Every structure is written in structure tokens, then in C-alpha cells.
Amino acid sequence: MKVSERAQRIEPFYVMEVAKAAQALAAGAADSGKPMIFLNIGEPDFTAPPLVQEAAAKAIRDGLTQYTPATGLPELRERISQWYLQRFGVAVPASRIVVTAGASAALQLACLALIDPGDEVLMPDPSYPCNRHFVSAAGGNAVLIPTTAAERFQLSADKVAAAWNQKTRGVLLASPSNPTGTSISLSEMKRIHEVVQGLGGISIIDEIYLGLSHEAEFGQTALALGDDIISINSFSKYFSMTGWRLGWLVVPEALVSVIERLAQNLFICPSTIAQHAAMACFEAESLAEYERRRAEFKARRDYFIPALNALGLSVPVMPDGAFYAWANCEAACDKLGVQGSWDLAFALMNRAHVAVTPGRDFGHADTGHFIRLSTANSMAQLQEAVSRLTTLLA
Image 1 (cartoon, rainbow, N blue to C red):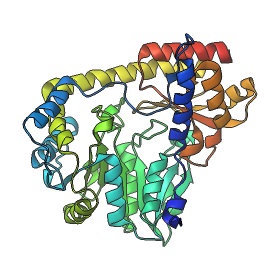
Image 2: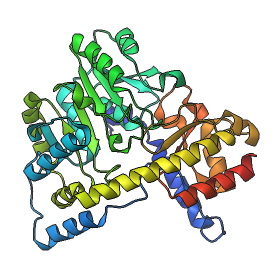
Image 3: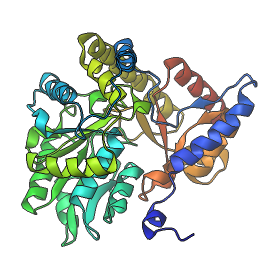
Image 4: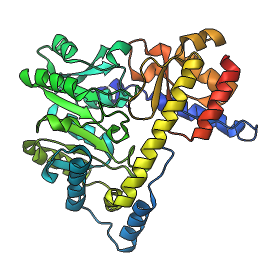
């Protein structure tokens, strides 16, 4: 059977390939006294809080399970709008918010609405692999621009201007970023957006980890910069609803009808039950719980990053958000006699029963010398992982 060129352009998602290997190994390690510790997947160990769970159950009991508008429940769009005002002090009209089947659907819709075959979209290297694949699926080409620790692994206005050419359609940035956990300051984001605006391009900003920002300098939404910013967000990370598959995007008013038409044809609507559940995310009790969890993620970061540095797994930039550590593993590779982060990931799985993600997925700029570790796990599990890695690497 002939496979489309589009499908062939999409590289394997190595994060998930490694995850499958870790799960298979974990089955054999379960009774060994040293069960697998999973620091490889970016999924909160917290689940939806009680009010959210009850709202989902109530929707089912009440029969609220039929299609909603393609743009989402009006009440949920309004709740999201109010959250932007309360949390960030930014007025985002509900009419510009489109609820989607996860942030993945939001990215797909944005790319299909704005990118034509042959268009180029500038992105930092390293960055989340699926973002560039959404561009590719729309017929565009993701142009990965190497970044350094001194640049916080993020693009700058100067780099965007230098890379721009006649094929460039815009930028797709993530703040905070996966895999680095670093953000772009609002002042630099403003300069980037001004460059993009001046060249007639588009600014798509992945903000799915914005709720998990830890530093005041970075915890601001790019939507404060103007109505032409396109922001992607999600209920998966801050709101702990990964498997519920619910997200949203904010677009200029003129683009809403275009996104709606695409969503009607591709998705019909997001999960109705998840939407009713998500409205309970914005109750005071739920928001207080989310903030408690955010503080817990920060405490984990503050413990884990220095511990990694002490082990020679150097984290060159302290993450200011999300729940990742982007660690240089050259010293660890030398210690264990392996070549690069891919081999190291399997060595740590087999010898310490600690699963991490090799850098291969995230780009080509020295990513073979990095691993990504997730702190979306309990403090006790992180401490045990450090103990095992110390035994192996000390």
C-alpha cells in the first residue's frame, strides 16, 4: 500500500518509542525490589481535582453528552476569558477563544488555517518535536534555528530577523518550552513580535505550560502584546487533565470563523464531557489546589536540578516553568562508556531502572548530548532516582 509523502515526512516520536521500551522493562523489574521510576513522560502525576471529576460524572448523569458548538461551550469560553483577566490581567474576549480537542488539535487547526505548502516557520532548536510535525502536516517546513544556553535555548528578535526570507510565514515558539523549561521574557517576545509584524508574518505561541511558571519575569501571556498573537493552551498540564484531551487557542476575531469551519469538518467538537468538567477547573477550590500543585512542582525543581548538577548531569539553564530538566549528559556517557544520550537512556533504564528521554526528538543542535528528565513525579520518587543515579554515576 502506497503511503503518502506527508506521512513519510513525519519522523517517529522517539519519546514514545523509549516509553514503550521502559514499560516493557518495567514489567520485569516490578518484583525486583527496584521498580522502574518514570522520569521520561511529560504528564503530571496529579489527576483532575474532585470538583472536576464530579462535574464530569454529573454531566454523564444529566445526559449532557451530545455535540457542542465546534468552538466549544459558550460558558467554558467565558470561564477561560475570565481566567486570563484574573490570572494575568489581560482582557481576552470569549469570542476569540476556540475550545479544541487538546492543544494538539489547536496547533493543527492553527497550522491548517495559516500555512500553505512551501511556507517556512521558524522554531528554536531544541523544541517539542510535534510542533514542527504540525507544520509539516500542513505542507509547510519547520526551520530549526540552533540556540544556546546563553540564549536560554530560545529565539531572539535578532535571530528571527536574520533567518527571515521570502518563504518565511512566521514563528512558532513555546514559552515555557518543552524540553528546556525556559521561557521568553515578555520584553523579548514583544521585540520578536514586532519583527514578525513588520515582515507581514504570524506569531504562534505555545503556552501550554504557562500556568506552571515559577518566575514573575516570565509568567506572562504573550496575548498582552496584541490581538494578532495566536496562543495555544491546554487543560493537560496546569489543570492536570491529560487524557481528557481538551485545549484551546486564542486567535484574532477575523480568524475565528475560519478555525470554526475547519474544526466543524475535522473534529465536529471537543469532548462534551471534558468541557463540562473543565468548567469546574475555575472554581475557587480547584484554583487553590492548582496553585498548591504549582508550588509542589517548584519545590521538586529546587531539589532536583541541584542534585543533577552534583551528579555531572549538568542543567545549563535553570528552568523557570513546566516540569523538565534539560541536562547535558556527556560526563555521564563517559562514565558509563556509552555513546550519546540515546545509549545512555537505555543504560539508565537497564542499570538503574530510571527512565529518561534522550535528546534525539527535540532537534539537531547538539541534542545528542542532552537528556530530558521530567519532575512530574513525587518528591519521594525523585529522591529515589537521585539515589540510584548516584550509585551508578558517583
